[in-house]
Length: 248
Image (cartoon, rainbow, N blue to C red):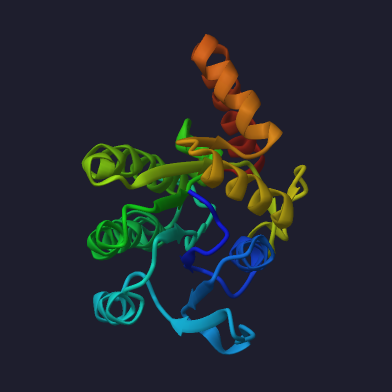
């Protein structure tokens, strides 16, 4: 689909990648952009950008957004959280529950609410912002990886279900993006603006799987060839981390 003239809704739009997506959509000629966030107070409103309050774990707010944004033909499910905790070494399960509630159930709720709207408006496009750890488990981020694997599977299911109504469903995969979420990490990062640009290219070209940075592309290719060495390296990484942290 064409970005120019579209009506988009972006979740998690008040910072990081969401903010970059709103700006990229504006520059690309979107007619209207609903910029959704739990706290939209710091989103600059304008003739094109309309801030809305939306917590994707709150069904009442999702229903209100669907009622207000009935003209959407491009939904970008960008909102998500990462607590960077291991599955067993974490002291409790709260982070795992919160990540699954947001990344999986929240995204599912948005898909369910807006699928009929997209159908009514000619099909359009639905984009889920996933992660390179959708493909594998990084044990220091074990619970986040699990939530993104679930969201990856969800994306494929939604693609099957919405194909008949003409909705293009796109999954986006990236490594570390230079946002607030990764401030404390020293690993190589890609700018949010670069990822946003690649997402828009994928939407316009009709691509179903967007490998948005070099990390996503290299991991995908390696796992396609033979996941054994990759998994062995993840085991080594965890063993070294656990020894350093005195875990296990």
